[in-house]
Structure formats: C-alpha cells, structure tokens
Picture 1 (cartoon, rainbow, N blue to C red):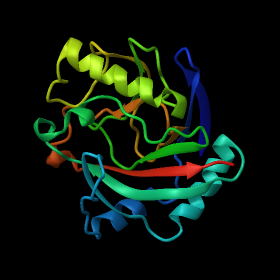
Picture 2 (cartoon, rainbow, N blue to C red):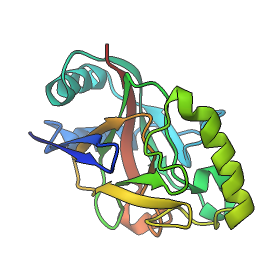
Picture 3 (cartoon, rainbow, N blue to C red):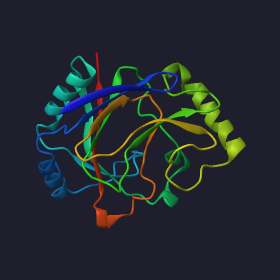
Picture 4 (cartoon, rainbow, N blue to C red):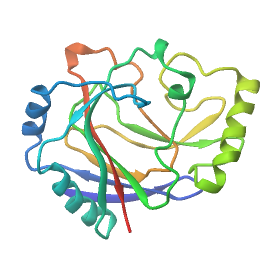
Length: 215
C-alpha cells in the first residue's frame, strides 16, 4: 500500500489517497455479491447500502491512523452502490454536498470497481468561496443555496460533474480498483457518477463509504 497526501483549493482541503489499499479486495467484492442491498431511510445517498464484513472496520482504523494520523473511531461503514436515475434525484442530491460539519470527522471512500465508473470531485461554492461547511457557516450556506435557486434555478436533472454556475471543481480523486481516499467530512464533494450509474454491463459502482471521528 502506498499513501499520498495533497491539498486542494484556497482552504487547503486535505486529501489522502492509498493505492492497493486492502490485502484482499476481491474477497470484499465477493462478499458484497452475497449481500442484500437496501435503501436506508433518510439517507440522501443515491443508491443502496449493505453492511461491511467483520474485520473491515478494524482494518480501516489501522489504515486511517497510518494515513491521517492518530487513532480514529468508526462512526459508519457500509458497502454502497450508486444506481439512482438522476432524473428522480432531489435537487439537493444534484449539487456537491458535505457529510458533517465537524472538523474532527473524516470521510473515506474505498473504490471496489473500475472504469468507466468515476471517482470523487471536490468543489468551491462560487458566491461564498466556501470549500468546507463548518458549523458557523451552516446558516450562511443555507441562505446561499436559496439565492442560487433564485439566480440559477434548480440544478439540472443530472449528477453534478465538474464546473457549474454555482460551483467550481478544486480537485479530483480518480477511481482505481482498491484505491482508498480520506477527506474532511465537511468539505464540498460529489461522486463522479454521471454517465455510469446505469452501466450494468460494467458491474455496479461498488464502494465502501465510511465516517471516522478523530480525537
């Protein structure tokens, strides 16, 4: 496993990337194939989830500690398959989002698929300049989204992909099989799902998505 770190945008958002991350990624894919995926109530993820195998959380904690530093606690970890028709997404699902306002929470995405599926992109909101949505910014963020709707109308019925009237892309973590990325849960990001959500012949866009809290 090789780990690289970089920073993105004017706010220097950190991104950690570990290639050839898991010692047995094919076994993870095989485990996912035996599971029943389901939609979680209240979850804005555009697809289905299933529980990860025993032992994955312990491995992720060790890997995150090596990449990010210090020992985190796992808040959530699940297989995820992005598959929803973008025409049926809510407007909030068609723009970059953040997972949590806390500065102590880090998100992880473990890619368990290959091209033509895409990775993850990171964004700056044009009018506010925000690249991370912290608790003090939350009210301003909601007001800015309302103004965006008045200025630009609702976002188009597609997965967000690259620059748009309201957002500019500041970085990207391309997809590669068995690549694991970590980034602050409060940074604006979106999966690069556009064009591949329905490509059943290529296999599903299988990932493991996780949240970790660092002390």
